[in-house]
Length: 390
Ligand SMILES: *Cc1c(COP(=O)(O)O)cnc(C)c1O
Image (cartoon, rainbow, N blue to C red):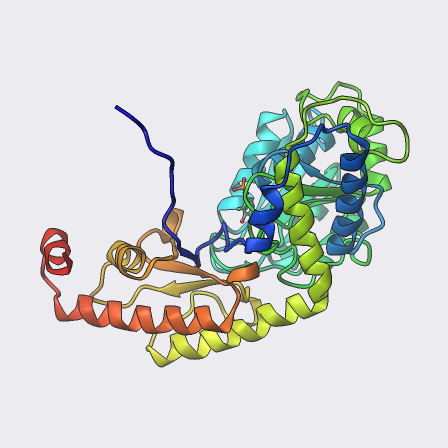
């Protein structure tokens, strides 16, 4: 047997991530690999850091990409900031809030959950009440843009409440960075993590994080060592930190970082606010198209994410079949519902490079044709449908 080179199909990525990667980013990643301590590489890392500070709107010294996907950025926050016995109030309104709770448990923290319905934003009053009842809480954690439901929570207000109760705030910005307004310094966010493959439109596998002085103080005063060697910020800082000499921690994913560098250069060229506006007005075009098909959004208008649209599955069609036809016949990927919403919604992403008017038109017409086709053939089995298409 001779295995051939892998050539992926060309898709339009309109799911919950990864989003379409621009040829400039792919080209940057194909440049020659150099040593991760090479002065030329170190200079590029400094630029990545400065551009991440811009994207996060922060002057935090400790701003860098963790060498692993968004989930590792999440773990970086929890393993460093939560000590055994620490009470952490976790706001849960979807899948990713649930994972934050899981992280607290794994590091020996005591989670206190603020439950919100899937499809609703985190309720600030409920957070306030919970913190009033748990005065020994040390941290508050919530998801800014809940990708599982397409909901935006009011990060600024939630952080204010956390601080009023002497808690540090950990914010999941995996899907919000580069897509919707996010101001780390102005909103006083203490610890934040994101991902490379959503609105930054880089390849998956890197997780930008940022920590302010208060968060670093908490880490410095830990009584027990950080339980993860790889994600221990006190060690990683030796490689990414300040102006001091870089020391070896792990081999940086050199070419992946070329890609992130290029994606951030493109964000800078466009301008952060222009990128936020592009996501908003492209969403409005999608909304018009979705409504013209008679379809409905899961989330109330005021808390909808522009770039992650949860749409209720129309009667008489099978959600999995819609996704399968869009992929096989139109090369469009959209996302399924997760957890309790599986089969009840599908999720249309308009993140980063995917967020273009041409993709809105493509998706709306493909969706229209697909739904008509499925309704016209209601009652047929998947196999019959497949043979009809063949
Ligand atoms: C995608 C996502 C993650 C996880 O990121 P990975 O890169 O898949 O590990 C975490 N939180 C939110 C809100 C996400 O959308």
